[in-house]
Amino acid sequence: MAIAVRASSATDAPLTASRRAAFVMGALYIATFLTSIPAVLLYHPVLNDTHYILGAGPDTRVLLGAFLEVLLIMANIGTGLALFSVLRRQHEGLAVGYVAARVMECVFIGVGILSVLSIVTLRRHAAGADPASLLVVGRALVAVHDWTFLLGPGLCGLWNGLILGYLLYRSGLMPRRLTLLGLVGGPLIFCSGIAVLFGLYTQTSPVSGLVTVPEFVWEASIGIWFVVQALKPAEGVSMPAARAANELVHVG
Image (cartoon, rainbow, N blue to C red; front, side, top):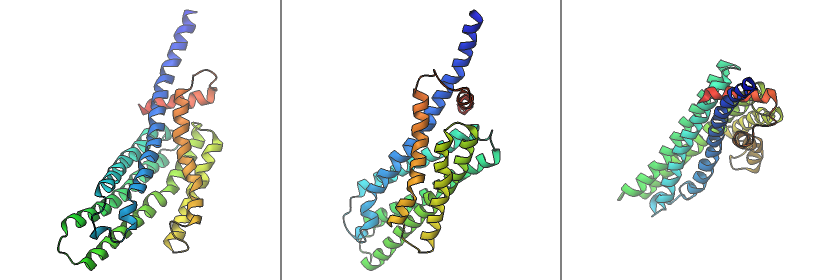
């Protein structure tokens, strides 16, 4: 009996640690939604009002949107690092590629932040400048932001879906039916980005929005799945799932 108790305790300890790691990783993925979506809404005036740079625009909401995107960068990199220790056991090269893709996505996001903040700076400190010139510069900076959104979260979604979906499929950390969302959604959003790049339709068109649904659901499912798995009781966990979950202890 004493041996059985000690064995149970030895098993519960890594599971507890892995649950904490899974919760943190899932929370980081959820954080990417809680920062990116409000940021897009807060950016609306500066991205859609061509005369924003000439008027007394709502700078506070734009600055708040930029701050949320800084938090988005931190959460994006955190998700890559949190999964790396586990995913490299499946394929180290692909795991490194996934982290690199997250970093590159963040680079594009950072350039987009700088373009938006530059518009705010010009609006505040360009008194006496030629209005026509300011409008041209403002539109150019908005165009830079739009392209970074396409090349960053858009085209980099291929790696987030395809590589991460494949590695999670192999690891057994998620149900394999859920990982198919990434395996399908990643290539779809990449092909859609190429279509937008060559002018087949706009980035805000219904077709583009429809194509992003699988990738959107895929990323949301990652966060929800790991948070739920971390919070639910340990009883009834299958042995393959338990072995896969135990690997998450190395994330901590």
